[in-house]
Every structure is written in structure tokens, then in C-alpha cells.
Image (cartoon, rainbow, N blue to C red; front, side, top):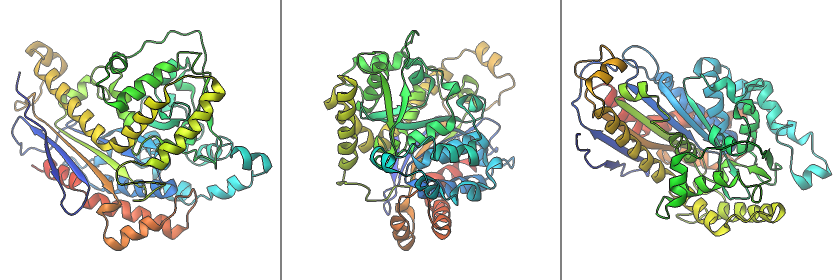
Length: 457
């Protein structure tokens, strides 16, 4: 078994954008990447339609880059997570691909969502919040998803993870089979528009989106979650997610789950990747993908304002306080006894260390992939990949991880982006500025440029 060298990290001195580079084993090859050698994952933050437009600009720039076989890099995106405004882009891309989003600017970015919402306002909605599924959800179906459910994306090339906030647990809520299995609910029947509406349900504006809990099913807890719940030394964000999902099986704690904006719980949708890893094996990769991959890129796209809500230098305290206060009311209403102190610690760690958590999870995943590949005997390799390249090496796997955000923009453009409000509807010129800013930020991102260099070695 080859020894895995320590992880190497480089930092752009001019910007805060981080690059996490794992370049271990094997030698650089002059040949262009073959099918299956490239794997890309993205996680998209919230920020209203500003975030959706910024993320669209990032995706357009990714699609403009092609491999030696002329396929765009966007065709190799295999994992997408999103919160709030980022969940709209994440879900639309997963469902329709770049080829199905040619009119995305007109179909969604320029839609007057707020006018459709204000038309439903009355004394009741002012007090309780707008019914997101009847307003935002309906528009999403009319313009983008057309009634599609999670069953419709099960066979798509990319795995999707939409993340909302569980208000009672003050924790991330991941739309995946594990979570809905704990709720005795079939994820495949859930509309994509309902998931995105929950992820984008800004508190006060929207009423919480309820998810019912049923009984009479048997839930098999993933070993990774069971281990995290039992290990006090486990990462707080991982332990929070595991404990929260397990609580859904207890009717004394949870009668229903009330969901709000995912960006209240975390920045990028990191919990979506943690949950995907908990599915076992080498998820979110298949064994066939894990055997062939040589170059991996994971980008965390941050479209949030540099100063959002009530913040200090490290912890988004305003979000913690808001979600914890809302969650306390929910716990009292539902009679649950989930430990509020643990939840607040966990959500704080989730937001503060979101990118660091992602880095650590990807590093461990890389280690497991290499260990699995190098542990295969010749017969297994021949059966799984007959005719594999002669220069294939089990430990040749490079992983690049980085952020794409406003800090990468020229000063004037950064100031402009920080001045664009977090709204569901924006003027056309603001939309176009945000799209262009996404493209500009990606092209300036150290991680993206390192990945492009690796593809051309």
C-alpha cells in the first residue's frame, strides 16, 4: 500500500480564496484526459437572485472550458449542492444540464417573483409569512421544473443535494433518501420545487415549509451517522447532522419538521456532501468512476455579501441567534427535547468551518479512494476495467478545492456586488452585472486555474 503524503495547501496572498491541493502519487502524463478521468463538484451559496445569477456566470465560464476531446468541463460535473438562491441554480442545472438552460436568464433570472408574491398578501400572510409553495414553488414549476420530482433526477449525471434549515433543531436539513427514510417518506415523490422553496424560505417573508413525519417504517441508520453520534470527538457539524436525522425517528421529539432558508444553517451546502459520503462505499462516486478518476475539482461558490446579517470576524452570530430563537419556539410547540446547546454549537461550527469541513471531508474521501484502488487485485482490476491504460497508477489522484467569491473581483466590481441587495427580483442591469461577476471571479480563482493547468499537463 503506497504511503499517502500529507496534504498540501496554497493560499492566494492577495485574496482570501483558498486552494486545497492534494497531488500525490503517479507522474504527470502528456496525454489528454480520457473519459471518466475528470470529476467536478460544486456547492452554491445563498443570496437571493443575486446568488442565482452569480452562480450562473460561474457555470457559464466552466462550460466555456473544454477538454481535449472538445467536451465542456461542465459535462463532468457530478455533484451539486445548494442553499437558498444557490439551490435554484443547483437544481435547474442538475435537472436540465447546460443545454437545457439556454434561456435561463429570461426563464428565471428576469422573472418578477416578488410581484407574484405581493399579489397574495393579506393580513394573515403578513403575520404568518407567505406560503412559499403556493407562490415561489408555483413559479419554479411554471418556469423551470414543470412538476419534476426527485425521481426525475435520479438518473441524471450529477447528484443533487438541496439543503434547508430545520428550525427546531437549528441544523441543516438535507433532501436525500437517508433523511426522508428517517421521516418514513419517499423522497422520489417530493417535488423539486418544494425542496427549493424550503431552502429559499427567508424567515419573516415566508412561512416555514412543513415536512410531515410518518410512522410504520424501518429505518436503517448509516454506519457513518451512528459512529458520529457515538463519538464525542467527531466534528460538531457531522455529529449535529447525524443526531438531527436520527431524532426524526422519535415521535416524542419530532412530529413534523419546519424548514426555512438553508443559508441560516450553513454557507455552501457542505452538509449535502457530508450526507452523500454517509451513503456508504465511495459515494458520491460509483466504483467505476472512482477507479478511473485522476483529476478532481470542487468549488464552493459564495455569493453572499461580505457583511451579511449580524456578523463578527468569525461567526455569523445573527444567523445563529435567529435560527436558535425560531427553533426554541418550535421545540416548545412540538414538545421536543433536542439539546439546544449542542445544536447551537453545531450550527456555529457548521457555518464558521464550512469550507474547512469540506476540505477535510474531501481529503479523507481521496484517501479512501486511493486505499480502495490500491487494494484491488489484478483479477478485480481486469474485470472492472479491461483495457485500462498501461500507465494507470492506483495512487495518481489530484484533488483541487477552492472558493469562488466576491473577494476575487476587482475592487469596483466587488463594491458593486456588495451593494446589490438580497432580493428575489432585481433590475435587469443588476442581473447582468452578477452574471458577469461570476464569470470574472471564476477566471480569477486560484483553484480553477490550477485545475486548468493540471488538465493540460
